[in-house]
Length: 316
Image (cartoon, rainbow, N blue to C red; front, side, top):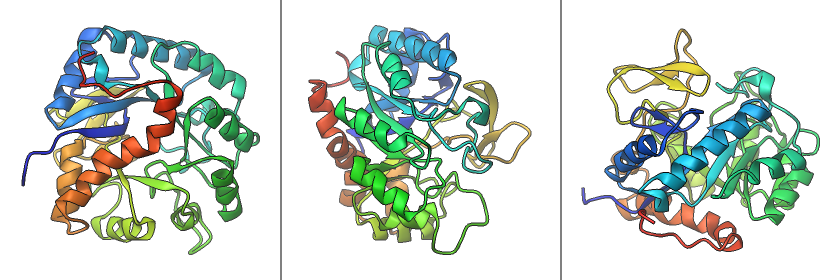
C-alpha cells in the first residue's frame, strides 16, 4: 500500500503515552505525542477533552492550550474538541465518561470554556435530548463551532430537530449505546437515516465489527475516520492514564478501564484505520483516504473560516 499522509483526526484524547486530559501536560509532552502522530500520517488533529466538572475541565483546557501553543508542532492543532460535559449520563450512554460530571447544555459554560484558550474550540459533542440542547446547538454554530451528536439516547424526531438546528456530525457512531435497543427506533438508526449528519467511525474492528462498519458507511454514503485514541496508542500493552482513570491496553489492542471490560477510547492510529477500510474491502484506498483526509477538512471548513484559521504545515 502507498504511503499515507495528510490525515486529520477530529477525535484524539492522547497518543504515545501522553494524555491530553492531563492537567500537567507540557509542551514537551505535546511535542512527543504530535511527532508520533506525524509518523502515523497525521498532519492535523483536534485534541479532545472528555467530560469533567466545569472547574476541572477549564483547568485541563487551559493546560492543553498552553502545551499546544508552546509545541514546535503547534500548526498541527487548529483547535480543540470538547466531548462533553453535555452528554446523557444514563448507564451505557455515558460510556467511560464520569456521569456525575455531566450537566445540561449551558451556553454560558461553553462561552467561559471558549474564552480560556488561544486556540478555539472547533467541535463540541452533545446529547440533543437534554434540556436546552437545541438552543445550545444554535448558539455554538453561531460562534463558529461544529456540533456533533454523541452519547445520546435521542429518538428520530429529536435527531432531526438537532440537524435542523445545525448539528452536522455523529461522534463514534455505533458506540456509547446500552444493550438491548429497540430494533428500529433507536439513536443509531435515527442518525444513520439523517442525511444532514456525517458520521465519524472508529475503524479498529473493536468498537464496530467490520461487517457492521461496511453497512453503516454504505448507509451514510460517506464517512469520517477518527481514532478516539488515548495515551495507549502507539505504545506497548500496559496501563496508562486517561483523565481521572487508569486504562489498560491488552495484547490485542483493546483499551478498557482497569478492572472493567468497558471500552475507554482506543489504541488505533489513523493510518491503520485507513488501511483497515481497504483490507476489509469497505472502500478502495482513494476513498479511504478521503474519509480521513478530505472529509474532516470539509466538515470544519465553515468553522475554520469563522475563526480565520488556515491549516498550516504543522510547525507554526
